[in-house]
Image 1 (cartoon, rainbow, N blue to C red):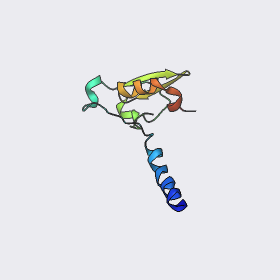
Image 2 (image 1 turned 60 degrees about the horizontal axis):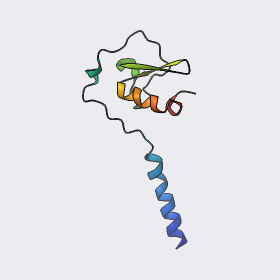
Image 3 (image 1 turned 135 degrees about the horizontal axis):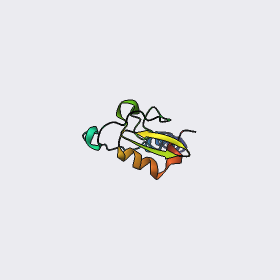
Image 4 (image 1 turned 180 degrees about the vertical axis):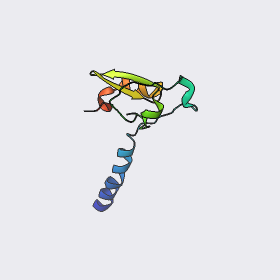
Length: 90
Protein backbone atom coordinates (compact mmCIF):
# COMPACT_ATOMS: atom_id res chain seq x y z
CA UNK A 1 0.00 0.00 0.00
CA UNK A 2 2.74 2.48 0.95
CA UNK A 3 4.71 2.09 -2.29
CA UNK A 4 1.63 2.97 -4.36
CA UNK A 5 1.03 6.13 -2.30
CA UNK A 6 4.67 7.17 -2.68
CA UNK A 7 4.56 6.46 -6.42
CA UNK A 8 1.36 8.50 -6.83
CA UNK A 9 2.89 11.39 -4.91
CA UNK A 10 6.06 11.35 -7.03
CA UNK A 11 4.11 11.22 -10.27
CA UNK A 12 1.91 14.16 -9.28
CA UNK A 13 4.87 16.54 -8.73
CA UNK A 14 5.42 17.24 -12.46
CA UNK A 15 1.73 17.92 -12.93
CA UNK A 16 1.71 20.68 -10.34
CA UNK A 17 4.99 22.24 -11.43
CA UNK A 18 3.91 22.47 -15.10
CA UNK A 19 0.55 24.01 -14.29
CA UNK A 20 2.18 27.30 -13.27
CA UNK A 21 3.29 28.19 -16.83
CA UNK A 22 1.42 31.20 -18.20
CA UNK A 23 -1.23 30.49 -20.81
CA UNK A 24 -0.53 33.28 -23.29
CA UNK A 25 -3.08 33.85 -26.02
CA UNK A 26 -1.76 36.39 -28.48
CA UNK A 27 -3.83 37.80 -31.26
CA UNK A 28 -3.37 36.06 -34.59
CA UNK A 29 -1.40 39.02 -35.94
CA UNK A 30 1.37 40.57 -33.87
CA UNK A 31 1.06 43.76 -35.94
CA UNK A 32 -2.50 44.46 -34.77
CA UNK A 33 -1.38 46.86 -32.03
CA UNK A 34 0.59 49.17 -34.32
CA UNK A 35 4.21 49.52 -35.29
CA UNK A 36 7.11 48.28 -33.24
CA UNK A 37 8.51 50.72 -30.69
CA UNK A 38 12.05 51.81 -31.49
CA UNK A 39 14.79 53.57 -29.53
CA UNK A 40 13.42 52.61 -26.12
CA UNK A 41 15.80 51.17 -23.54
CA UNK A 42 14.20 48.29 -21.59
CA UNK A 43 15.69 46.06 -18.87
CA UNK A 44 14.52 42.79 -20.40
CA UNK A 45 15.61 41.10 -23.63
CA UNK A 46 12.55 38.87 -23.70
CA UNK A 47 8.93 39.35 -22.75
CA UNK A 48 8.57 38.20 -19.10
CA UNK A 49 5.15 36.69 -19.83
CA UNK A 50 5.54 34.71 -23.07
CA UNK A 51 9.37 34.78 -23.35
CA UNK A 52 9.29 36.15 -26.88
CA UNK A 53 12.34 38.25 -27.82
CA UNK A 54 11.33 41.90 -27.43
CA UNK A 55 14.13 43.36 -29.56
CA UNK A 56 12.19 42.65 -32.76
CA UNK A 57 8.63 42.84 -31.47
CA UNK A 58 8.52 45.59 -28.85
CA UNK A 59 4.89 46.75 -28.88
CA UNK A 60 4.36 48.15 -25.40
CA UNK A 61 6.20 49.11 -22.20
CA UNK A 62 5.47 49.39 -18.50
CA UNK A 63 7.47 50.91 -15.66
CA UNK A 64 7.86 49.03 -12.40
CA UNK A 65 10.21 50.17 -9.61
CA UNK A 66 11.87 52.72 -11.91
CA UNK A 67 12.67 50.07 -14.55
CA UNK A 68 11.11 50.00 -18.01
CA UNK A 69 9.96 46.55 -19.17
CA UNK A 70 9.18 45.77 -22.80
CA UNK A 71 6.38 43.55 -24.08
CA UNK A 72 5.47 41.97 -27.40
CA UNK A 73 1.77 42.80 -27.00
CA UNK A 74 -0.69 44.75 -24.86
CA UNK A 75 -1.96 41.41 -23.54
CA UNK A 76 1.44 40.55 -22.05
CA UNK A 77 1.73 44.04 -20.57
CA UNK A 78 -1.69 43.64 -18.90
CA UNK A 79 -0.68 40.25 -17.48
CA UNK A 80 2.53 41.77 -16.10
CA UNK A 81 0.63 44.61 -14.46
CA UNK A 82 -1.64 42.14 -12.61
CA UNK A 83 1.34 40.75 -10.64
CA UNK A 84 4.58 42.56 -11.56
CA UNK A 85 6.64 41.31 -8.61
CA UNK A 86 6.40 37.72 -9.88
CA UNK A 87 7.76 38.68 -13.32
CA UNK A 88 10.14 41.59 -12.56
CA UNK A 89 13.88 41.09 -12.69
CA UNK A 90 15.55 41.05 -9.30
